[in-house]
Image 1 (tube, rainbow, N blue to C red):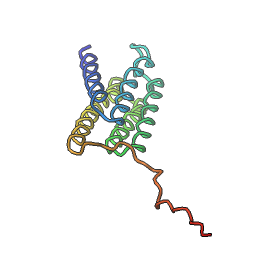
Image 2 (image 1 turned 120 degrees about the vertical axis):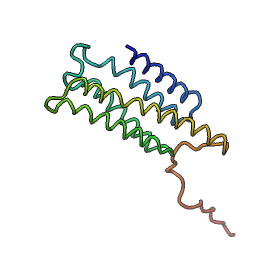
Image 3 (image 1 turned 30 degrees about the vertical axis):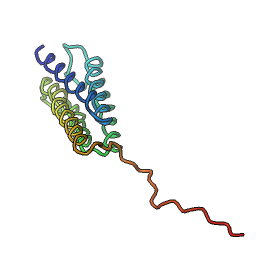
Image 4 (image 1 turned 180 degrees about the horizontal axis):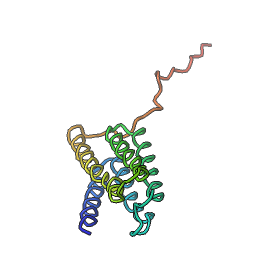
Length: 161
């Protein structure tokens, strides 16, 4: 119970900080982490059988969270979404651990659930760094722009009479 309370407090503090002080990528990441954390227990097996087999509901939530972080990593100018994607990828692969012989269900449960703590730390540090860049430069570009023209526009041809 104490672990649940500690996690809930850390989740609300980290996501709240990112939502209030972060740029768009930090706010999106906070929403992804928060929704994933809320949905996972809702789709998990009953307490007595939890982590006795592959948690298909949690696996699907983790897959969606991975995909969203991957998209965020591809579209933002920040480097930390790559870290979040990698950590979520490790979390995703940890679902396969229960398929190994003699794996203790509690170990599988810890492997799936504990990866959120470093992700929350990365979110807090990313938000803090965003604030530092704003203070130093006055702006902090968030998104990678792929539609910029490769050469300046040509002026229209002049008509000579």
